[in-house]
Image (tube, rainbow, N blue to C red):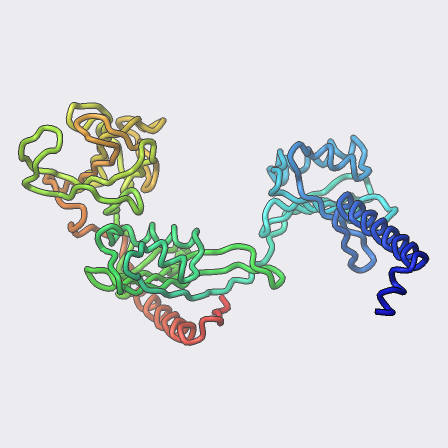
Length: 417
């Protein structure tokens, strides 16, 4: 109690209040200085300041704030446009690094950082001319392995998130598996899956995710496996365990993760007309305005309207296959009869035109003039590996599988690529 009384003594209390006031003043000054001053880095006697481009910032504004002249600004803008094809700065994405010999020295070097893997370095020569050099930052690429299992009531996306697979990688996996699977009908509790993918690091810090290297999914039709492989000519693709092309010329489900509301049937009661007739495609529920991607590359042979299909687009993919997309709310700009489209290109938007009870995509595959079930038809691969390439692929796959086995037992480890 004596110590408590001493602290509450008037003189001591006054000294304490003054000390606290002084401390708070110092903290306030520190906060103001750190908030208004760019991050300072000192390396080998140099002074470096990094500025993140903010909304309303321009190249001219940022350079003038660093003490450069209007002539310098014009020269730098010109060389950035001609040598680096940079004409504007993007707020909250681009960074500028200014280098000086010391705090009071003029700027001797400027580094424009539009991405973690690409930088543009500007230096001023003895003649006063600004020179530009582009530099690619070396990536520290690490392959990591994640695996999971579908639980009762799960979607693949939820199970993938629980397994620690990033959202962007899951989207890539969806795009790959959509050639072989229907995520509405083929996903069941107890199915196991795994993904091997890249993580990109710089100076020991993860920057972003890279490419999917291998996928395995225990689908109803059997285990689906895909491996990314670079061929001798430098091109890459995805192949199954036998070296056959895993990327098919057409997708079974153009809109990923869309719920099937009506299956292919030779004998179905039409919900609008009321009588029984064949349903020559598959209906996918989606909200009005959802983009509809082309299931495969090809040429548009019809873009029109009729009472049954409403707004529809028909694409010819080769001598055997055609696809049709119906009930669109509107067509994509630039998609007309005769237009060549690539796989995944938006050709229209979901709607409920024609004989329809609600917004959805009606999707058909026609093979040699006959309608086939998109969910069961055997789809042709874009390309398979040749004999010699298959040998190299099998050697690569065996090495990759050994690495996966080790990662499965040690989930915190990674493969240095």
